[in-house]
Length: 94
Image 1: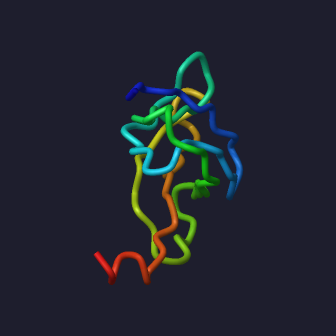
Image 2: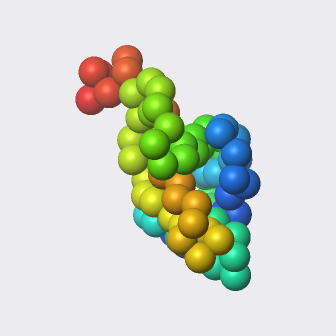
Image 3: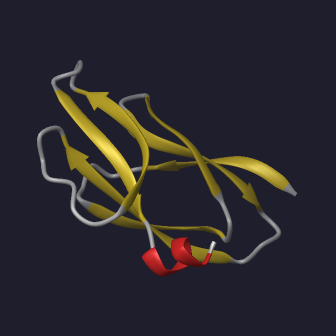
């Protein structure tokens, strides 16, 4: 069954979140002061680790990454951009 799950993000360079395989990350926003991603999942599928990268504004973005979204905290004083690394081999095979 497909559902939309929310996963809270840490404000850190890299983190791993377990979510069902083929989950589709829809959005990133701040809710109640915490950054979160909303993900369309099939909760009947097994879970896999997914790496989420966060870069501050003006920081170098390393690697080949899929952009998820941008969020602000501290009344807009801090701006962060969220990405997921792309496995280049998988992208070539598509």
